[in-house]
Amino acid sequence: MSALATDIVTAKGHPNVRATHKSTLEVTREKDLTPRGDCIIAVAADKAAAQLNPKLLSELAEGYHLAVAVEVEGDIDVFFAQGFRGHKPTSTTSIVIRKSTFRDERTLAVKSTKAAKDIDRGLIEKLANPAAQAKIYFAAAPTRKSALKLLAALLEKNIKTTEKST
Image 1: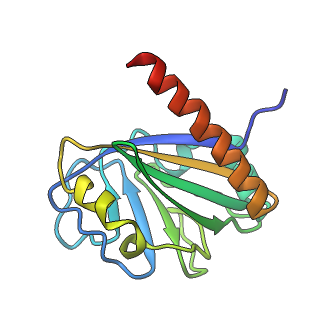
Image 2: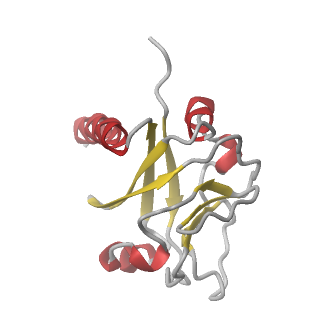
Image 3: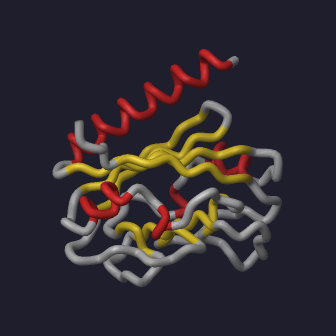
């Protein structure tokens, strides 16, 4: 069976998480965050864009759709974005998703349905706590519907695993 175009990134909250940026959303491997980092929703991530599953990156480089779920303490917010042909991010520091079509080495996907300011405020309040643990789930597929189905399967598998370990 071929590898699925999915991945999971774990990260932490920080007291300076504000998530008020209107056009971008970022998760960073950096451990510190200044109040100016208004697009950042989580810090101390275990992966950056270049370190994501190669299958996920390849499918996004074909322009596939991306379904994303941000989960904190059982609360989940889901949104969509799109890859763009020929682009593979090279950043080893962060993952950026944009509403616009601007792309650089940190950009994983564009044409997002949400930016930092659009993420559920209850999740953002939780992420302002440095003890908060976040999981960001990614799934890429040719259509938005198929990406959502793949994301749902990933969430179900992960939730079952979590329930068994508690």
